[in-house]
Length: 471
Image (cartoon, rainbow, N blue to C red; front, side):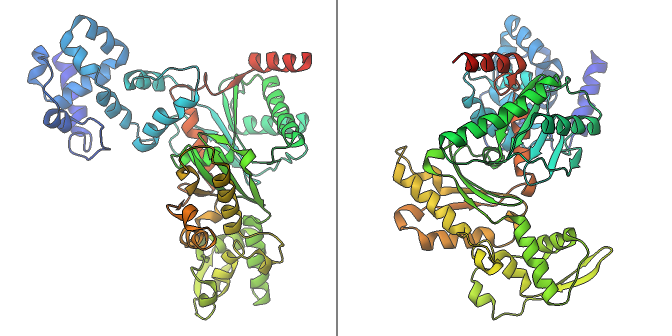
């Protein structure tokens, strides 16, 4: 016993900020437990130990044995039944921030009709045994894939640059695509569930659009289940981006590879009846426009990838485009293998394409006009008593990280919309850039209720398919 306690004590004293770091409000810490809560009933011989050590003993014992001990020892019962204790243990998972863990477990679980509200003791016990998942983000022409389990905190393990044309869903195309992913990851398809991030396509609420979306999912599910994948969770990118921003309601704006989608989402559900706006301007159009401008200035590049680097490193969105034209704003960057490049007006004219697509020869509405139209539709429907939900705009996508975009979009929205709608508008920059949807999928795959309440199994899919045939 003495040796065990010595090891526990060494592990505690070696942990940085185990007893001194600040934590999220309402999360128990050794200090907050002794300073802001009533003293617990006597713990016998454990009373002589620092509370930090007692906490570590409880953690090493684990929730199952701690629960058993609480049955025979009233002193332990008061300690281990305190949710803040298990919240503190959950915070020790440094692979996810505590804010994201707390949001996921307290907000995303309510979308599960199968699992009752859990205590954090139960959540801690279940998260330890969550199998994780293979995540495939099919967003912007580049399909990212990798692990979601705690053992791989760095995120995805690889990036696969093959594009699958989902406009015409094909079983064989998806089968070959997923087989290639599992081959590159060197993992059997039958070992883990998969979370698939889907681009928003056929965005309206017509019968033909619903049929098209259903055919897409059926082609994906059939291909994966024929490969013996145990369970599949397919979620659209807009919803995942909202989850990554720790929101369940709002307007998700994804500046994708080829198009920009403006999607109203209420309590995790895409409100297609309110109108999903799609603008035919994406990150690729901005990159091509920058290359055209550079060629006009006698700067020729061998690779479009180099142009994209310059866009991401040097370009920005002007707060006032007309005023910016009168300024001289040069900036230089060295691209390995290509040399030095200096951009001036190209730095902000590139980003201006989002608001004035016509300068790049595109006949489409501006980003601010699409968002304002979506907000106007949400306001007109008045589906809830509180209209604040659609006043939160969450950006996602690599191009959405351009400096100045958040401020410019807020400014334009206030200018377009009446004060009754524009008051309280907040635009949130993408926390993870082009990988925002990927991190949203990661939140789902690490939930304590995953995969049971989020995935479709092969048996469920086959049964539903048979019922559809009967009807």
